Image (cartoon, rainbow, N blue to C red):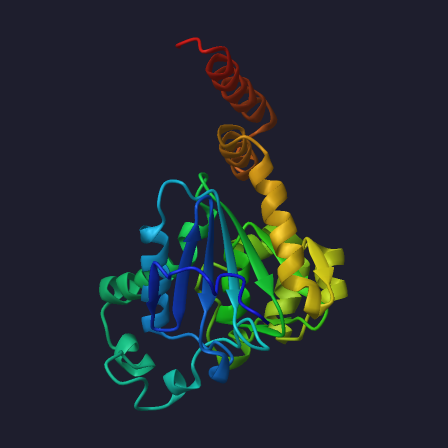
Length: 267
C-alpha cells in the first residue's frame, strides 16, 4: 500500500510506529512490513506515545499498516525462552507478584486505550492479516474499513493465553457474546464479507482502493461540527451502560449544551 502520509514530516517515528499530522487528520502507521507489522512492547510504548503526542487540532486518526498485512500479531521472538532483548519474557512476567503483573499488562494496554477518546474518531484501515494483537488493535478503533483480502483471527486462546489487549469488550459489543466466544476459542479466520455482515467492519473494498476509501470516510467525519461529534460519540459510547431513562436524560443534557453553545448563551 502506498503511504498517504509520505509527504508529511513525522511527528514521531520510532520502534515501528510513525505519526504524521495534517491539521485535523493524524495518521499512525505501523512500519515493520518485513515482519508483517508484528508487535512488541517497544511498539506498544511508541503507540502510547503517539496518542500523547497528538495536537489539539486533531479530530480524526487513521491507523494503518505498511505492506501486505495490517499486523500479524505478537513478534514471534516474544514466544522464545530468551524473548526480546531488553524486554521481560513471559516467564519473567509470570514470576512477578499480582500487583506488578497487573501493572505490566496495564502498561501494554495503554497502546490500545486512547483510540476511543471522545474528542477523536479513529479509523483502522485493515488489509491482509490482523491476528491476535493485530485484531485487538483494529478493535481498539471506533471504525474499521477492510480490504477484501483481510483475515481477522484471535489466536490467544489457542496458545493457552487470553486476549488481554482490550479487545474482548469491543468484540462482544460488535458481534455479540456467542459469536465472540466462537471466534476466540476456535481461532478461525474471519474474512471481509463476514466482517461486514457481523458488524466487525463498516466497509469492505478491493485492496487497491483501501486508502482512497479511508480518505473519503475521514473527509465525511471531518465535515460535521467537532463539538457535535464529541457529544454524539459520548452519548453512543455510554448508551450500553445506561438505562433507557438515563440515556434520555443524557441526550437532553447534551442537547442543552449544544443549543446554548450555538446560540452563544452561557449556562
